[in-house]
Length: 464
Image (cartoon, rainbow, N blue to C red; front, side, top):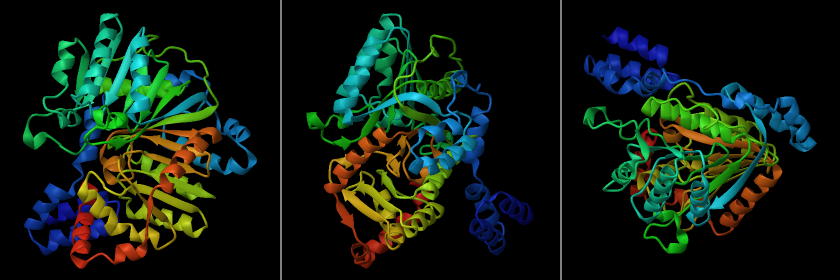
């Protein structure tokens, strides 16, 4: 048993320290060490995700559109930004989707901007609506969306909704019963009522996608919940950023939804109803990037590595949960020592205390080498965006933490456009101006009990 377990650890563990550690446990604690490895050491998450999604058909409607080649991209970039072509080449190799020209992305700040635009698009729908979200709260906002979707169903619009099975439980009772009564075709992503089969925090669909008539899309980091309507003074306010998407890249949002729908419900969505011809709408060159513990494993993490390695001037990161692994920490430090200005915005008061404690335990590793970390004031900052050299942006659902980069199914969009990057840089800089810079002295001056608490939380960071 020990030999078989040791061979498995040697052949499957990517990190040498993990392989050495498990082999040591297996041999130094006879029998018990082998049992521990069988229970805790084998990564069943990736294997289970791959098996469960292996029969899902691939959708490549974007291939019918004229892709933006690397040569086209190079010609469209200013001379001082052509180093970003190497980043596009990396993402080309990571994904099966092409870059697409002719897009427009409009930033929508909080639910006060985003929800009216989304509801208006639903009200104007004529053919189809695809909606996928992690949290769909059973509150005033959630009920407004259900009412709009019900009206669309009554008009004869084909409506499909995916809600993550765990995210649906953030409200009690859930919104699902109301949807069923409204005649809305809704599916739960990865449901389970058997306790030992319910991967409560793993294999979740964290994607936020809305596509109307196959031509207008919305994506970003915003769930559907009353807390995002800051003008209505909710009890738990959340500041977030969403995007209205127009142009050919909307087909890649729809592809992602269609794959998840086929997985969740077994129905294949195709044809003009779901994938109509899309005309150019702007100047943004963009591409959708899916990520998850299946065949798309590590796409986002490697994209972030590429962005840090490519950056020449600046990297701006805003994320609610900042728990980068050692390789990303090294990449940020290396970029900072090359002279790249790296600024990271994280909430001053996180809604998940354990995540905040773990973050404080490791953030000194990047501050020490020149990265700047800022604590944003309330309301809780849930925005997720990365801006490189004021030209390349990455927006979407993923955080800079192991759950997003290793365990959840995420959807992001990479964009090459100065105007969009300038808009997001303005939002970033306005937030930074109201934030407090975190210093090395402050972190190292914490009382010893706090340091121990934070250090213990850091040990749990792969599971937070």
